[in-house]
Image (cartoon, rainbow, N blue to C red):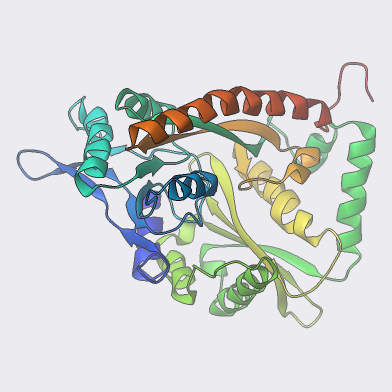
Length: 355
């Protein structure tokens, strides 16, 4: 499974470790004959960074009331807001395995005396099991692009309102006029020099955002070795052939996932070209139904990425705190739904009668 190879690369490269505050504590379910039939990628954490479902406000409230919010358990993919399976179940596993995994997560939280256990960006089947085990449900949204059977990028533009279509064309023309050469490199076409350059881009982006550089240089070597057929690296080069910007994507069975981006030059619209438009070019050419460009960013909306609901599950140990969080989520869920509806009129797609 490509997901487990990605997780292994994070651990083997030291990107998830005590140093970064992501200590692997995976939950494994075994059959009576010792076969692994279920797995939950799980991490013991002393902070809430790198998760993309923000609970720092909960932590602050609990600690002001005299509690200790950290450490907590986090289920999901570190530094990666990709929705998908979180309670991993083998094809031949007993029917009740998923529910047993969900119940075990709550039991572990109790046994270890933790404040909370969180499973983020979970798929629907996992959410059903988790809520049945007493987890609270939280909603959010991301911006995803859907391929409607386009033959090329112009087919996609043809579905947009005239003003939006012209704006995107001007952005792409501006980048084309910059003199940069842009290449979409896959698998073995990605050389060590590209990874060296991309790591510099990654560090430059971290510095600009005052973040933490969780990913180590060896991480990129590991995914190049173990996920070569899944890696899509879009690189901009100057006139001397030197890489100056890049966007890292991972290809799933039916989706292109945008992960990291960085640049050491300041070129207008280069971020949009590498992260969004070239991703769409690739998905259309490869017949992929969907592109997910990561969390947040309403600027994605006007480029054809529409709001899509995400779901996360949260087990809270303290009864009073659980009630407070539950009340908050009861108000937050309809507010999220209203925000998604309010964003739809900003979509670039044509409305009835529009040119």
